[in-house]
Each structure stands twice: as C-alpha cells, then as structure tokens.
Image (cartoon, rainbow over all chains, first blue to last red; front, side):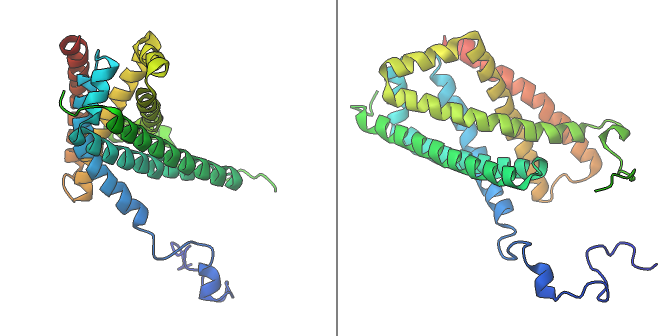
Length: 144
Length: 129
C-alpha cells in the first residue's frame, strides 16, 4: 500500500470524524513553545547566577552564623540570590515535569505528581524569598 | 485484552556505547538530584533566617559525613548540569551540531566537570578552613 508512514493522517474514508473532533483533547495549539522557551530563559539566567552562587557558598564555609547572615543580607547578594531562587525552582519544575511525563504512564498518578511538584516548588521558592527578606531586614548593618 | 507476541522496537542494549547516551541520561539524573538540592538549599536558608538552634542543627547536619557526601553529590551534579546545560544551549543556537563536535564537547564537559568540582572542594576545604 502507499500509505506507509502516514499514521498521523488517516485516510478520510477510515475516519469519519470532523477535523475539530480529531483535534480536541490534544492540548492548546498556542502554548506549545512556552515550556521550551521558559526552560531556556531560566537556564541562561542560571548560567550567570550559579557560578556566582558557588563563589558565595564557598566563601561561607566555616563562617559563623552572624557573618553568614551579614554576607547574605548585602543588597548585591540578596537580590541575585532572590533571582537565583526564582529561576532555579522554575527551571526545576519545568524539568521534573518532563521527567514525570516521560516515565509515569498512569494518568491519575501523573497528574497528582505534577500538581504536588508544582506546589512544592512554589512553596519552597516562597520560603526562600521569605528567609532572604527576613535575613536582610534583621541584619543591623550592610557594612561588614 | 489478549497479550500477543508483538515486535518491539530495538531497545538500548542493542546499541554500541557512545558518550552521548551517557551524557544525556546523566543530564536528566543530575537535574533530578539538583531539584532535591534546591529543596535542601531552601531548608538551609530557612534555618539561617531562624537562627539559634535551627541553624546549629542544620550546620551540624551539613558537617556530618552524610551531609558532606550529599553536598559533594549536589556540587558534582551542579557543575555537570551547568556545563552540559551550556552545551545544550549552544546546540540550541545551532553551534557544534556535527557528530564529531558533539563527541568532543561531551568529553570536554566530562573532564571540566571533574576538574571544576575538585577545584571547588579544594577551595572549600583548603582555602576556607
């Protein structure tokens, strides 16, 4: 037969449904590149932020709590840290979403996991932002 | 549903090993590890904000042998995912997409991952304390 390789386009006489009926339930046709695009944007932000963060964290090894808090409270540490937290949990959510989509084939388990991962990432990011704000507001001086 | 013997598509084990397959699955594995690491980072930051006993407990956890092992795993995953992520971004920009280039960049990322992780721990252990 000549229809080898046309699995996605059934011949009209085999499928009596309208094009609309065939398209329904397959998802939006307008947000398809959104996931890919945000994964790259957050990745670029993290390429810039992660080397800086590693430097800050290494400098905190062996530091006591007061100097650790003073370091993090400095505006030019606190602001990039807040940006890192948002980018990191967003990027993590997008990545884990794909892992779940690929490996979890029981629909209700998949949806439940997606919801839990999203909520956990949002809560953790908010906790980090709260902690950063709290540290920044309670350290007496930025000059250390 | 009747289970019939049906032909399967060739699975992983029929292919000769190549660096690309290992790099690909390690990128995913390190990403999942780093998600756990991000939650650990949130826990540490909350302890730092709370101060007192919370921070003392967190610091003791991280300084324990198991804590150090976790930190080493997170740092290795972070360096690998960062470098291999840059490799992915360069591919997205259309750069380095010939097969020999893909193999070469894979080895470059592997070597740099080991070297940079070692450098970080050298700085953390020797330079810090």
